[in-house]
Image (cartoon, one colour):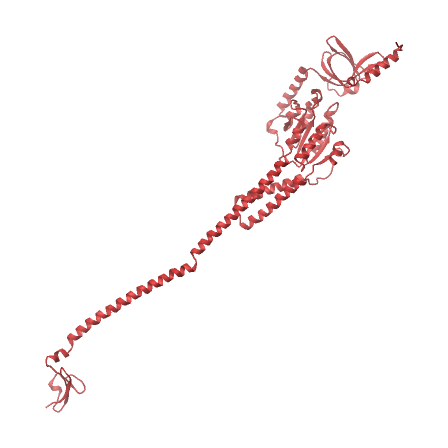
Length: 77
Length: 393
């Protein structure tokens, strides 16, 4: 079995959770303006990264019994 | 008309039966009789139903896989192929799978097993785990050749291509299928999948029976991550459906259940983005309000305003000072008039008017006593109008 390389889903989850945190923090509204602006910029960048991951995603299929099966061959197409 | 030897006839019959598709893969339901286990381990018996019967053979290898051998009178469902045994001139059923048959028997066994596992807590709602909302790795246990796998992959590709599928192939029917499914499950337990789908496309109730196996149920129960079952069609319910954390009616439905929909995700991001903008706009509006509020307060304490106020105060002081001064002057005048009156009353000039005179020495000393002068002294006499010098006699 191959090592645990990161998958897009993992990255997406991390970014998505961060984006949610940022929005909630901004919505509470009692942040200093400079901090709010920094958060906002980070939020915009995070939302764009999420969008990019969604746009570029392609399902990956790994066969535990080796890659000779039709499923794996099909998945490579 | 043809003449055949017995062996020619039997060979012909054998070939005829072997070429028939139906006879090569058939389920036969009947009652066991004349069961006989030969010392070689092979089993021979007859399957009966009403007035009909057929000889059956179950090889040692098949018999070895069975938990219990059938007894005479058992209603069974036998799978295998029908072939012609030339030596004896008999048509026989070569059994490769044998199960209790009849809705009643099978169902009763299934219900008993279900009750036992339920009593053990294998189906408890309290241990059902929620599916991960964003699964990173999805394990799939199914046949590598079935349509179910491709159906599921297509759905995942469309709905949630962010995921990685870890596929553990297995057999989903036939002898030994249960073992391969359990092996595939445990292979996935060793990976870092977030959720596992166990699936099989639709089939006859006998084909789905694999998923009613107790060992398989326990293997699913042991899963460290949530398991979704998607076996057969909507109307099929197998034991694995009760143990699984979530039961899906079909493999495709299972794939949909484990995957969030991409369009919803995109919507989600858009909504978060909108909230982000709204929150920032509100924060900026708040800041602007704060600034204008401070600006107003600043204007209130500006020096200009102070100067205006001071100037007014000064004007006021001047006005008050003027009034005061005028009053003082008037007072002084009045006082002066009074003094002048009194002065006039005391003045000796008024006495001189009446004919009196003031006598002074030449040094100016008043002479009020005659002894103060001697003869020939010069004195100054002042009368009402003017003064003159005189000599004392």
